[in-house]
View 1 (cartoon, rainbow, N blue to C red):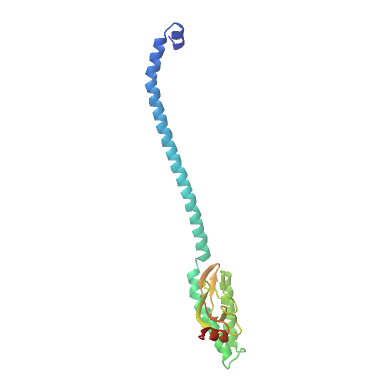
View 2 (view 1 turned 30 degrees about the horizontal axis):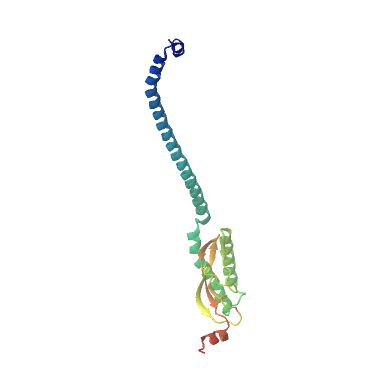
Length: 193
């Protein structure tokens, strides 16, 4: 007999006993479903966190790869900077000596320097502008403070060694002397009142 027929025939007691028997099964099924729902939510949360971590890792790996491509030759370029310095010194010394600028040797060294500088520029190496510019501690290394009537205070007076940048990264800071302003102003400041 079905439950509906039982109710119609006055079998209400039989239907109640079927619900009472099904009730513990229903409660147990609801607990199991709730447990599995919680487990599913926890696993979904874990998946989302791992997916986010993987995206961050992928982004960092791509940035590292771009930096490696962009700055991978940084050490080689640093090693070439003293060669440029020596070529510049050789040209300056030859021009200051009796040989002058017409010497074939000086012209050859000058062409070599220009070719090497051009090659470095293709890889993103740029010389840092110094003389007459405001002193910048991120790109200049001050080795002396000198009084100057021609150059304003806190500006570069002389460059002792060129500084270079690889793209936006410093390869080497420029060694410079910085103006402390006119000599007369400094003497007045140092004099006791």
